[in-house]
Length: 318
Image 1 (cartoon, rainbow, N blue to C red):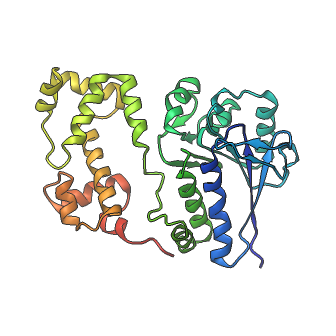
Image 2 (image 1 turned 90 degrees about the vertical axis):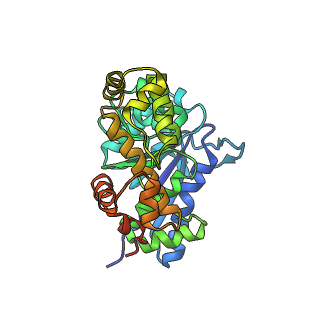
């Protein structure tokens, strides 16, 4: 039986990010080449059928107008600087129409603003470039913002921009055609590690904390500076000049976690980066992440990530 070709559309907006746009399309082209099969087709769209100017000043001529796109599997809205100001009611209505007819919908970079404005992310997990994170949360509280590199929730696909589009596409390629195809594509782009939705945008965390409490941000920065040798709750409180009870209250109020749990997750995230990006032994990694025993580290890691540290390190090839 002939394998169905996936058809993706990329809707350009004014000043959309060139790097994110190309990072989304190139993995599809390479997947066709590396697999030796015709797995993907793609089309470039604009609202009017006229060219749009990207963030780099390069104008791109589309294949068709948005309203002429009738048989896409997924449509991605490509955003960039100024996308948060776009409130074209005709555009929003067209996107709702397309979704109503069964097409998946996605956004690259700040294109998430447009999906949110159309009401297409209400109750869905999503992400956006860190510069737009606070504004998205305040303007569209019905969305579930995660701060991840990319997020896929049912038939909604969002990524944070830049090269995160590569990771999202590689994930989708791997899910559809096996992780070996995705891995082969990643090698073509010198993309040494395929990031997952578990990878967070570090800048987002700092922005969110700073908006909530400067003292909370200071405590988290102290935690980040003391991963290998975690410091006590008493010392954390002393360094910012408040009581332990106040520290507990800050974390519960703004993160819905205890300070100890938040600290533990920082250490586990640190361990994961060492597992994926270095050749350090697992013993060296758990010590560098503030754990005293391998068993405690392995149990904590598995509970948080759903996979053992040793399995995390192995190439996931099918």
